[in-house]
Image (cartoon, rainbow over the protein chains, first blue to last red):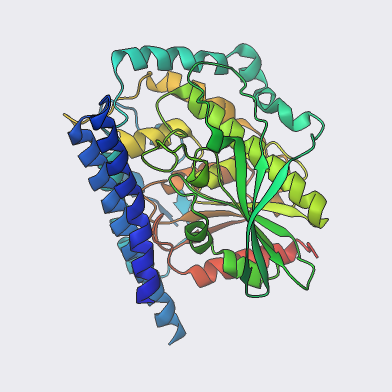
Length: 68
Length: 385
């Protein structure tokens, strides 16, 4: 189960990484977003990804608990 | 019985009216004491996710004066007297004869008992109101569907599973929407990517669904309208291909679309909205505008105008078009993202159809076995076979 959870965590992080890449790209070109906005977006999405991963872990533990 | 207190946990700013004034306070059945900690833990996770959401989107969606003016103008075509009197006119394509569909198979992989086929259907969506803000987006001109099909047995029906906001990656959607469970119960499953989500996001999007929900009222309204258009396109195609009933199960934003379609399409065999919001304006304000000064993200329009502009596609603006017995609303007791007042308002609006409250929250739906059993029993009672 740890492997799927790790995969979920990585996959959930991808949008954040993508957001960084796009924002950096924009700054290299014609910047429309401030670095602060980009940082907030990435941090916020990482928090959401972390919470989602924790929730999935708890759901897995709960399922095991009821099966025992 | 007790009144839900989830709204009290949200820190609504004084500048915005609390939507509890408009939606009735939710009255939930008593929760078993053993489950109370689950709801508490779920609510705590929701509140952290809410913090992340506000941090992620509050600054990104802050509007300039020019954007505020544009937002005001973009909402006007959706508040005409004709649409207010008859909001179904907004979805006039549903009454038009079906057009031939172009389908292309992209990928095929085995799943236990069958195979998952990824397809794309060309959508010929035409906006209700053509404005400069509707993006030309090649990725969004096709509907990507992962279709789980039984190999040797006839499916009981097809469950069209609609994901939530910022989702749209099929394998994550399949996990969250419990596709394997429905498949094991004998249903085919179709995981549909909603407009501007997942594979339908433009390459420049920072996150899935960025172009779906913004303060551009016109674009958001058109995105919801396109979601209805595309879901209807896919369900007609699947129904024609399989000859079996095709119903809807939607989570969060997907639940909103499913609930809306329950008011528009009288031939749906079942509709199961999971934690569905019912008013976009209240949802947007609660999700995005709670970050107090100096990061406050004020809506571009006065609250009442925002509500009026979104009203055309609110499930509360449409009467239920199918028998109540075909509907099962699912709400979360500790939901802080889409508070229980939303599901409760929908339940009241639809004349109190079957409803199930699970312990947990938006991101942490505990007691899933009970939820699965409840939905399975509901589908069994419909005698779809």
